Image (cartoon, each protein chain N blue to C red):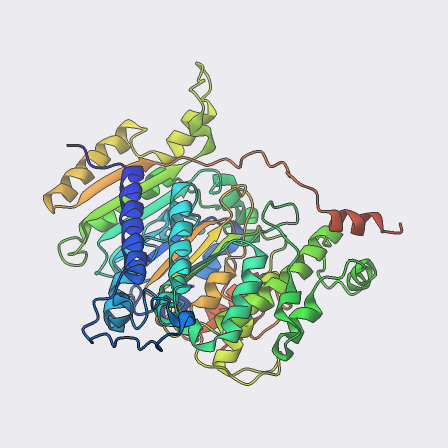
Length: 372
Length: 223
């Protein structure tokens, strides 16, 4: 007998989950099997207004509500999405979305069910657009313990203005919270062309091509995303798997500002507050064991993404899996607390030859060699 | 990169499907080789073959003793080469820098030869170092391999040229060596594979929507 196809397996899993969901809903709506004897309702005599029969479910408690939390967790685990991978599409994506929908339905049953089902609802989070990013941030900010439940985070954000998934980040839903001022300040204002011209005036890129207004505007847009990603990551300390997908091609040789959130996190974790004036935060993603850095699926083979991204994560001693796909350019290891100016990497390579025993961190081109 | 990766002592899987230009050798580690010897829990490894090839001026590129740079824990070892990014001229133009240009002692890279050297280096240390090794794979790719052969009497077509550069079975002498290598690996119960990978093209990118805000921004430019 041939093994089941992927679609058949997926359908079987969905059918199983639906049956579990239907059973759960049935338990909630079923008649009680409560052992406590029902007290007869005392009706006043000769009072026609009280001649009605008692409500059908009076004094009854749904069977499922009496189950201990441990059992509920085991039951609802079967509803949680399984085998969540980057770049889900088609049937796999539908399966994931249906699982999320089922869990959400269970959350609406009661507060008790919500407390249990939420753990699985936020266990594996896929973010494909900026609206979801903003709502996720707001949710994690409102419910601080919820961030502890996030175990896998897949960020597959748009990487250009003309991307189908692109939406201007809806920072308004963050409701002007004090800790989100930086996000709101970074929000792109359409009339920034004058600012673009001013920035060009101070362009320190040397012989490198100056960014177009489109590139510059996109960089500013991504700065908002970057701040939001940073705020999300510091609220998910138990994250075990992080996937940064749809990494855009690198327009310049150095790490663009889109990934400032990484530098910010590492600096916070390592106790550096030189640039951002922040107090050191908790250790940076101490539970992270899997890292995936994936370029855009539809990217040109000749484009590149800043592989010094990988370098930033090399400080995480907990990592057990690193997958880096379709990277077209590799840059020297970068010290996260330094800027991007300095001597060329050719000189850095010479310096490395002179001091082979020192741990040298090289900045991306143009680079600056700093020894630990 | 070797120094950075060495800190990840619990790393079990490392996949570097990375492409590279120019001066990557300076960033890898000592002698331009990626050194993963300290990753004692590494089980699955995939990396560019180029990261294991030592390039020196005046000397043909060679694969050093891999027992020094690869951990003994590796079970699944994959190296790959892509013709489109490791153009011999592009690599040799960088290697050696000004000195090579002046003296003409430019090392010439042939992935096919390097693949053979890689297999030889691994098989020579299977008995005492790579004891856990179960599978060794060499993957190669090139856009030219998607085309049909168009060789004529005088000139190799781009497809055959790419094969000659990449495929260890493309030439008689290297094919013989591969068969010997395959036999040696089989004796130790290790599977040896050579895989031609597909090169994925970017689909035609046509923006399906306009961005009114962006259009407004651009239209407001007072040039």
